[in-house]
Image (cartoon, rainbow, N blue to C red; front, side):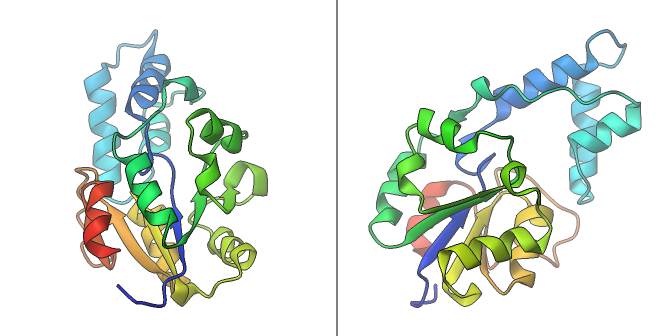
Length: 201
């Protein structure tokens, strides 16, 4: 990795925070009272994500169902999140660029990781959401670093990797066992878990 890197920006969901239990609850709440099974709805989400399309929102539109609120109290940190943040904080400035509900800082504080981050840019607070390039540009402006001095780490090619690359940031895709049909837009690096960042940074 480039020796000039000064800042590392993270997505939150499925990057630092395991949202699978919250996601499953959202799906269950969405299909409640219908004849659509959990597996059928989940498979539609995966199919849409494979094509680089919005998963949950797209599945709701496909089945003409109302989207249900996110259940944030079911979120939890990945087991390696704090270890990796401890390591990186000694070498870099850390930031967040995320599509999140209002109150992200409070949730990060509750999870015990708020103090690691010098800049937090969240879609709900800013009124801009990824993949809009302006949310990345805002984070870079607040950090005072150039795109070439920054890395974006996220689990979504469409929301994290492609827009960050358009902003000339370095990129790391945390795959989390996801696949995509189009391999032409992969990140500079691909990892399966946060601890693999030790090999890069």
